[in-house]
Each structure stands twice: as structure tokens, then as C-alpha cells.
Image 1 (cartoon, rainbow, N blue to C red):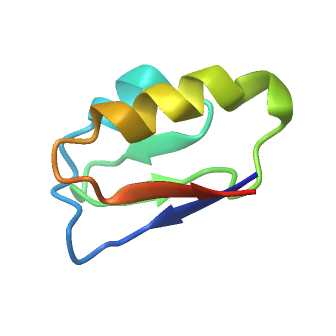
Image 2 (cartoon, rainbow, N blue to C red):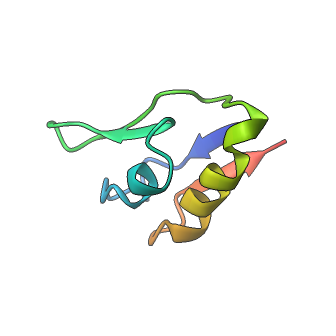
Length: 63
């Protein structure tokens, strides 16, 4: 699985970080960072929750 973020849509609101802190991080500069673009399958449920929860629909998954 590969995480794709449309940074033009992203508001760095940290909803994804709450859902999957192992993968997403909003830092003090108020930008979203992807900590692991290809997270392990064990994190799929958390990543999918982050995708669903993104208010701007900026996150998607590729398999």
C-alpha cells in the first residue's frame, strides 16, 4: 500500500495524525509529513481510517 497526499488540498488539520500517528505527523511548522509512504499491512486499518476521516479528502491509497 502506498499513501498519496494531495498537498494542494491538505489543510494540515491533523485528523490523519490522530487516526494513524505512526504514519502522519503535523509539525510545528503546520505542515503534514508522511512518516512512512509505504506502511506495513498491520497499519492498514488505521491508514484507512485516516483516509476516511480527512475533511478535505486529500489522502488516498494505492495498492
